[in-house]
Image (cartoon, rainbow, N blue to C red; front, side, top):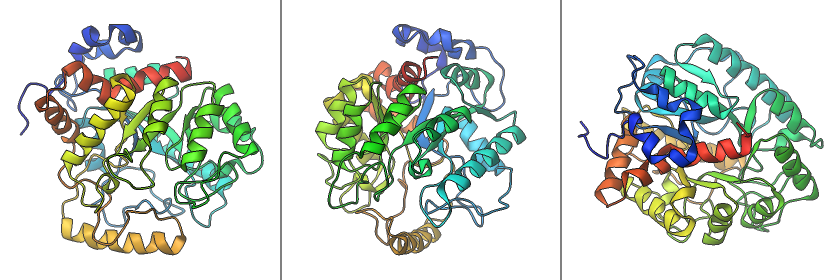
Length: 393
């Protein structure tokens, strides 16, 4: 069990730490005194820039390769919901729709948005669809988890940048330009040619800016990332990544990319993924190392977290390693794997999972001398500022 102190950052401390962010205007300050059986007043305030609500122990649980099959249930596992609520997650950017695979990207994505809308409606006491920054405050105040709907591939735009407006109207708030491979917008991190943003990609970025949709440059190749930063008139995000200067793998970002995101007012989310260590056997200390490097490069106002995982722990690690072996093989066959994915490497941090993962991370950062104000920024306040800047609410 975690002890009191920096490990437990009470919401009631945020007003003093975040006066410049006008936190009270979002309603987070009103969380104090709101009764809830799901969260204590000592919960951290977390905005996970990329994650999910999923029980990996449930039979048939979806891996990262693709979407749920047709007819997938419209309810979420109760343990996954309970763990998300216990974790202090006020909002999480949850991937909706097409990432890779044989589906028609546009049709599949529209269907997935509708399916997730129904899931959220089926869990009104636990979930809230986020359409504005104020909804994040509302979710925190009411003891719910705000679901930010986002994409991890821009392939569903087809050849029509105007589809950005269609998806914005459906409530999509964050769109990642590419996945690991190439698409009509640019190159992903695993494309050897390292090509830049295409003309169509620039049109899409312009539409994202016009609709106040956050541009996500995770998974992009270096030149596409740099071009995306340059093309955007609004702050951008790299919602889930690591630092290449610490671990030299393509899914991690160079100091130049990190610095330019920060200079534009954006945010870099550090993930809880095996790419944080060269051998793939990343542990919690590696997460801290990457966060500290990102703070050094970007400044503490521009670093957050995007775990790329959920808040329910894996119960059987042996089974997880076997499942990961099969998943890596499937991703390689599909041509969407990334350097650093290998058999024997699980897509999470074994000693930083479960509903206490954010409290543990806060405690580790506090033990290394980081102030409570910095920790609060990293866990959620920096993300809240960027989302308000981009969304305009």
